[in-house]
Image 1 (cartoon, one colour):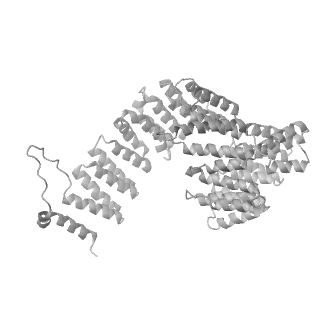
Image 2 (cartoon, helix red, strand yellow; image 1 turned 120 degrees about the vertical axis):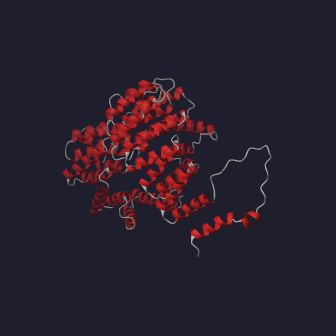
Image 3 (tube, one colour; image 1 turned 45 degrees about the horizontal axis):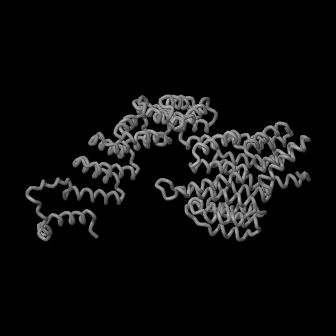
Length: 585
């Protein structure tokens, strides 16, 4: 077989031979008055170099290929060749070569925004953060006015993985020096500086940046969005005031108010969240997302009648907008139908629930809808049909097969077949022994099956693989505490979980239950009451009720248990608690 060099040489020579030229049809002659055509830089030599460079690259010699394309780009000045040489270097993971090509590109085309963008990305990947100041500044200057805000807002994501985030914040602030003084760009620029400071752990600096951004233009949503991020990350003095000040403007964007409502829910302030959503729905009654979030919050609180009204209002508005450009809300519509199906299921109308689930046609929600249908079958005692439904569910994503396995195992665990669930997960672990989700779920199945040594081994392996897994620390600590075993060790595990996830109500529930097991009943009451106030849940209600019962507050205990029954009458912990204490709420 001839080498590719011979083939290419023959091809190029054939194109230039007199015989080939004589056989070609004569080109049409332009009118005498026509301007001569523009000269193309393409010739036999250049074509040969380009084809050879591409073939060399495909054979794995990226260094040679990049050099050929770069030489051709320098000789012709063609920007597309500089770009291709850069892409070759990037695809071959040659950072220094990529930097050489981008800098040659920028030298040949000083005003090229695309060349500056490539150099910026390469420098960030190489960790040469300080050198990114010039490309950022030049790229911002080269962009059209209507693209500058979006570019500035994207900078924190570009620098998210750099090792020295404080250096990134300083570099970007220097690069945006002119933007920070511009009335039009200052809000977005200060917001990006603030986000970079926050990534570096400087909450006070981020708060200062948000304040300066809002001072530049109180009507801009950018500083308010940064303040939302600060508020979500923890108590930051002044952040909430910035959000509220922005929301006082008649031009305030509804997305900011919805974001604020979500943060309030996460902080355990549902009444304040409802107030924000009610205000939004009064001011903008035709804005669909306001009704969707309101309905989700009401459904989470088991206020099913009100939730159904809000969700159906969302569907009415979303359906009216269907087909309009930029108004594709199929994912949100599917989400609303999933919630309506859950409400129908709670009131015992399984036929209506199933009909709603069949209407879920978003690819992202299709598997979840089928899994929900399987759970409904299992509740009717049709466990085999439920398992078959899970196995027949569509797999749109590579991870869906594993998610189906986990769902089937949970179905078995929740319907008194924990041993079968454990064996299924243990078999899967043989092929993927370090999958955290498999290990955790297998540990939970082992706990239900009474395999305590297996449970502990599996959860400790999760902790070994991921020392930041609050759920693994919590699950192991709670299991020990619930059985009255090694309570001091259980305390250390649960306190570690609290440290990792201080706002998690279920971890607080474990802590309160541990305090009860240790005999500190009043402290247990305080912790459990706070957890239940923040997150009404049947299991927390079961524990709170038992603590109140032990304190002799029987009426309050019965009230807590009745609330738990309204939330989830089939909750296993609640059912066992009432049976063990022989109490009817």
